[in-house]
Length: 205
Image (tube, rainbow, N blue to C red; front, top):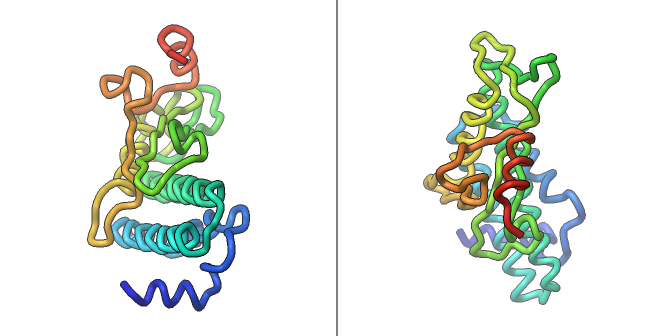
């Protein structure tokens, strides 16, 4: 894809560092287009490719500081997770509505970055270690009501697919969920209370 480097050079992006929030803003612009899932996945992968080419150039040719390279890679992963979650929520909302606690308070999926992502030191070959949490039990308020745990499990599965599944445009990031409570044998999502109890009883430094 030789035109990509030419376009990056013409844009001036190779000669400067990213401003805070700039990568996220570029990713969020993808949500402004009324895409089906396949089109969104491809466009997210093309954004990831563009950013990786820019970051590699900044690293190898421009001599960018290591801190900039690691921060940009981590910010790219953060942005990808944020927009993938938003897209997945918009796809589930027509059927399930909004998840709520027993007293009617809206609930949201919390995605924790662990490992190198959590430490803001992602490198070019890193996968991303994620843990999925939600505040409290309850059920959704849509035309098809399901328990919050079931809803957030569906949301987590969709988020993983949007990032990890290979398409003709490649993948965004490999997702590793083995750091969740009880690892591969544990549930995909857990409540705040269950997570706290797990850390108190079974967590290790």
